[in-house]
Image 1 (tube, helix red, strand yellow):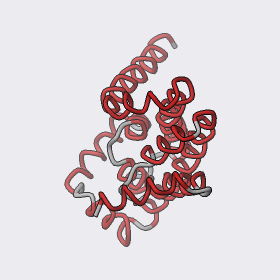
Image 2: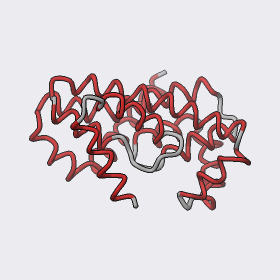
Image 3: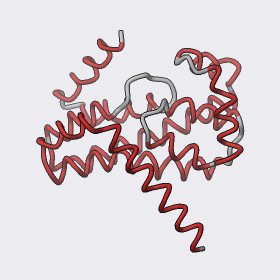
Image 4: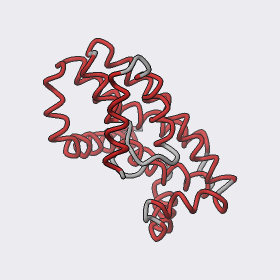
Length: 193
């Protein structure tokens, strides 16, 4: 089923509605949909490298707005919808772990989840359920999601279609490296201030 969804998502790159499809995919993925928007972002950006940063912006905006929907689901509709979405991804037992991450790291948990390949929707929904400060959630989501999508879009903008093979092969390593650098920079700022 996921393979069919994946192929369906990729077909949107060949239509004039690719930008809208990217926005809707990014929005949906942040609150309930299983396919990450990176797939369509890469396809669109490789097809039109000069518009790669525009596609990254579209993807970031859709993702952050979808994250707000996820937060709303957790905040107001956890019993009705939120638990079902989390159960669909087989992460019901991880909710307590996520709660302890919020207690210990607050916005860091959202920021790291927003940048890495973990199911971001679970973090948006639980952020609302655990009533994480909305402004902190919004800021962490905006920074992390934008960093993730602009990294991909920026690489394609700079290096063109040939970078797709590199991104596909080393995506998880790139994400981990960037996350370590992000955490180190925030830690450094905290120590200096």
